[in-house]
Image (cartoon, rainbow, N blue to C red):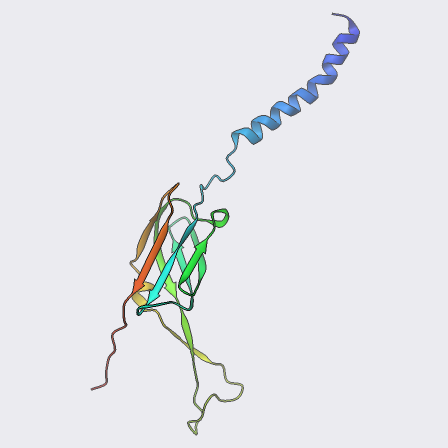
Length: 153
């Protein structure tokens, strides 16, 4: 082999190795090693779409969530949830007025307290689970029944 051909092949070798390395690196890696899935659905509270709140999907290895607006929630696939079983928690709160000593409205400068609208069986003591599946629609509906009213009689 002439010296000129040998030198040219050595000059091309780093470029060839670079191209092969890039092809291996990018071709052998998955874009999303977690295989995230989009999740969406509805939340109905006492027969009506939940106006505003949040929903969480929790597993031992992963937690994600989304806002609930007008009864609907969506977690897009880019920020989605890996396949598996998840404990679901739903939260929504309403502001409650603090009464002044005279019994009138909010006290100036006093923080407004909030009340959880969702029964604890759907948040703090939730046993609601859903399974997120790879390649499926993963559309979930949550219907939260009327809360039991207790009386002081």
